[in-house]
Amino acid sequence: MTRRLARPRDNRWIAGVCSGLARRFGVSPGIMRLIFVVSCLLPGPQILIYIILWALLPNE
Image (cartoon, rainbow, N blue to C red; front, side):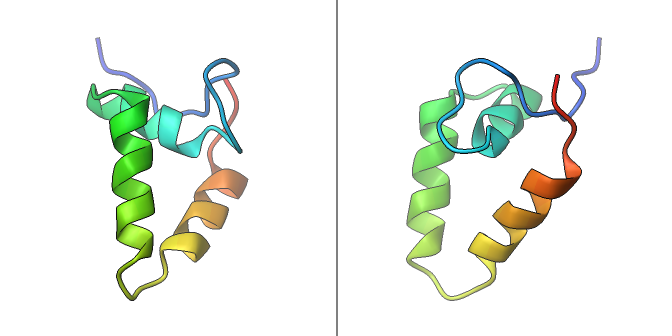
């Protein structure tokens, strides 16, 4: 069974993007949030990608 990439209605903090990605890849939502926060310390468009995923990913 493949897991669909979607923002769950439960276990969200801001928009559910990290929680949806965590479910899709089979890791803990806390780990995914930590990876996102650490990646924000590096140069790049992480915040922009988060906003785009927020807009594009459907709710469950």
